[in-house]
Image 1 (cartoon, one colour):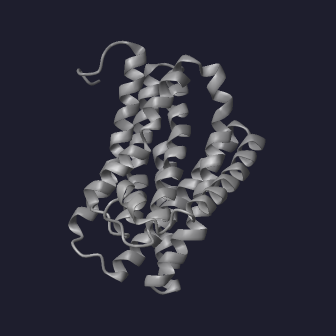
Image 2 (tube, one colour; image 1 turned 135 degrees about the vertical axis):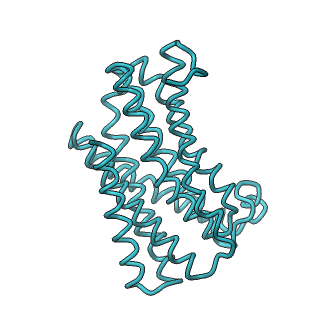
Image 3 (cartoon, helix red, strand yellow; image 1 turned 180 degrees about the horizontal axis):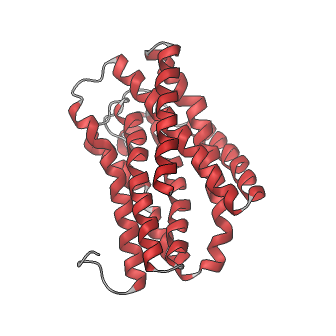
Length: 257
């Protein structure tokens, strides 16, 4: 399909999975045309991100249940506990400006914790998708390519959600694009071992999907939606979030067909 990709199956799995990671950065492009972050735009961005993340969470849970209900539920609970404890730990670093500047330069005051949480959650989420890519190639190169293309397309609105959170807190769009790509790097890194050791990694997939969904749900309900309320009215937040949620769910169903 791509002449620059080596013929070795392992390298093909890696590079196709890497292209899915790069696709995540495309979600930041719309923010290149937004020159000024007014409170209204910040509220809209947070509401949009909330809807996209809720839709992605429901998609992860639904996909996990297809593999194993119990493991998915346990994964959701583990994700909730993990992100709650991580939130508490990051409270200690909030306000340490030197530390914040080294990692997420350019963010507005008080935004460090939310930026770390969104990057962390989406990175964990990408690890589960990487396992999905790797195991799909075990069913043949054609099936793996179809799965990689579907996930690459699916990654674009996820990159939009990440960028909406980061740019609304003062980060330039191109840095948001790089951080979006960074969150998807576990996809090629996890795809190769999952391809080589399918029988070992496949049972972990529903728990990983549930874990990412639980963490994403907590962040959306605890941080992103309350932030949207600060900049736009609750009814506008509900409208934008619901529309984004429906569009994300419809998009996932369409891509998965």
